[in-house]
Image (cartoon, rainbow, N blue to C red; front, side):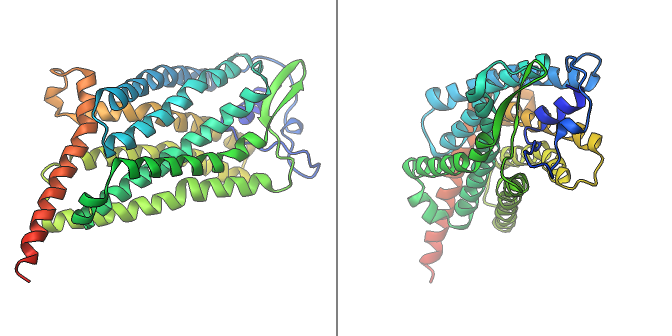
Length: 348
């Protein structure tokens, strides 16, 4: 199998291998030479090394966040949001070793089920992460706009239910990545690739992923943050901006990690783009998307405390402070807002 052929199939996790003779068949683009992918391929070796880093830091970092938010901290609405986000990232990083082995050997030995599962988990992570960021943004917006109502109605039970709904939607939208994933024996090796056996299904799935997994959620997030910024500037009621800085960092990181992937996946639908540009663009874009899963715990650490205090506190304390400070700040904000609203009502 030609190296560029394999890179397009694997790294994109989304290249169409159609059974329809009128559609593009990647095997007809390149000749097969049957050598290992990372022999003489600098980009592939770099991406392989990046995957190893993502696995180690992602599993350890998100594992620590799960331990702290799930077992060490008091259960709150904020820990519910971030625990779910960490679980999503942890699951993805835990399945990434299978794909990393596939990069190194160019031979899928893990069977049909794992071929489908690894692709499914990637998009499950994408959808669940962005949906959770939307939920957190809307939660912040409602708390700022309607502090009295939010203080009375925001409960852990409701937050857990909302998270469950987000996961159900994420699973539903990720199912096509498992349905159209297939295993094929080719030139003595086993390939794990996409087999879009329904005409135009690749196009529709790609567009739906972009719309529901990126475009619409970011519009919601931008609207929520615009409202929050305007409200806070007008009344100057927030004593600490750290929680909003953390959320902003999470959103900006997700945006920059996933924009290259979506850009080249959409470009791949336009056959006028040079194939090699799509190949390497998707390779880099997919690795950047994967990197988002280990960056979140790092953001908790480096934005949770003042820089000068970072070396005085343990990493566990930093993460706990980063997550817990959101709840403390939000409680202070809601209490202060409620008291101001109450005083205002006595003058009406």
